[in-house]
Image (cartoon, rainbow, N blue to C red; front, side):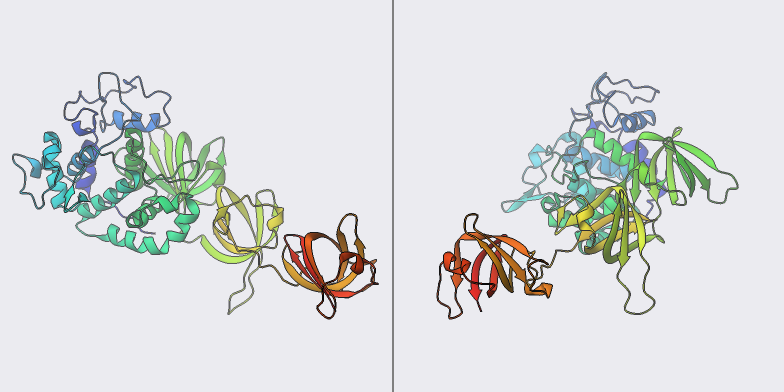
Length: 486
């Protein structure tokens, strides 16, 4: 898993970026930065992102849209993000005066706000924002809200711009192929993600920059709110371990009451940290919960103030992906018999703890793992003994099994109930013609076809008068639809 860190220059300017006027709802006019401790905005307390917003305010990264309003649910526009990118990358100096010459022409250039015009020009020239095709030309759509899938693309491009390469974009191209199936399993609205954004979404999720929603959707076309921007930029900086957070690496030695006791790397004593109510947990690129942590896990804690705000479980040596069969299920404990390798010793059964956010699917549809799935084969992904993902294979029905809803089988008729239109059959598979042993009672379809040994049709009443005749039976949707006597 790639772990990239942007340059010091990028991180420094990021500390100034979100304080820009363009992130206020009314363009360039912005109040003074709220640097004092405490929450000066009336519309933030009680909001889900209040801790993230508070932190961004405390370090002077964001300001409000009025004297006492932050507008956490307000949407960020494309013009505003252009200003953010320029300041974040330290290239705002290129916007001074008339700015650089245009390398393109937008059909809606007359609609570009003056406070963002040169920033948009710089972003286009740097290939950070390319505009949108319309007719024979292109438009920038400055007032169009920025979507979540567009947001992750811009984050990756910004990191590449800072490092002077295209590594993140190249990685996104790889992930668009290698992680597409995993992304489809993780987000039920995967089909709504535009193809050009799949790899970037996979990258951002894998690196912990952004997560999905509680209903297991990503919301690719959902506008980015100011609150979400606070959370994402805090996570980005948390992920990079810069400035307003403290990064502590180590091994978990104890858990309890929402706290994490850690033996820091190269330390001789344990340290205990409380977790924030909004703390995020990521394991193998998948969001998990505090309950999924285990003693012995190697983790990276990011601490803001006196609280852990992000936990990244280091899975490199503990991540397992394998195929096998579910052999037992006891509460959250799942026992799997891995398929044996082509070479080497057979693999022993392993018992895993199903993650509280585990993704379990059958033929692409989400299901709850239950006792009925014991004996089923599938693909499994785990880390530190935590089962993160299960994809069960489709059940291949045995056409010779009379229990199947659809089957063709042979056997002997034991009885015909004309009143209830049922037939009792002793299938040949039992190996016993004694009706006291394995027999099955089936409903007869209203239009059941009955043929004698010569292939001629006979009536059900005639069939009932025969003594233990052998026949071939066709079963569809649990009913006998055809009987052919031998």
